[in-house]
Amino acid sequence: MKITRDLIYNNIDQIMINAQKVNTKSELTLKEILNDDFLSKETKFNNLQEIFSSLGKSDVTEDTFNEIPEEEWSEFIISNTSFKNWKEMLNEATAFYIKKHVFTGIL
Image (cartoon, rainbow, N blue to C red; front, side, top):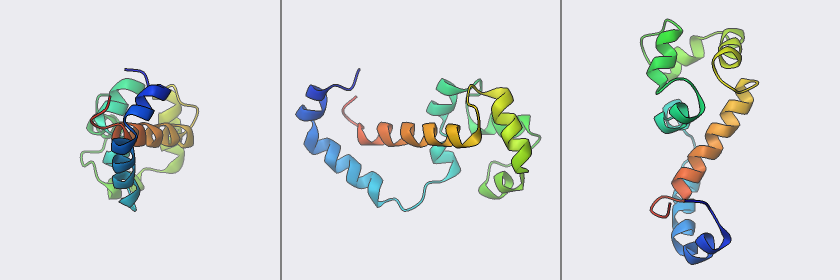
């Protein structure tokens, strides 16, 4: 379903409730941002575990992610996704997360 002016207007109360729920989260985890829906749609990977495995990592944790050298991660993003860099991918993933949660129960 496409997001239209009428869709927003007719569902504004639910959108506001959903947006408030998103707004109350002070921090998102890597798994929330790079969720399965986003990764399977925007990359050749189905989930974060596949990405970590391809990098030789067995644990999908924030600590493991922080151990990946920035240059290695940047090269991985460029080589394995359509994104030009990590910042572009992160921005797109964040927008995907917000859209998904703001329109929960509507789309």
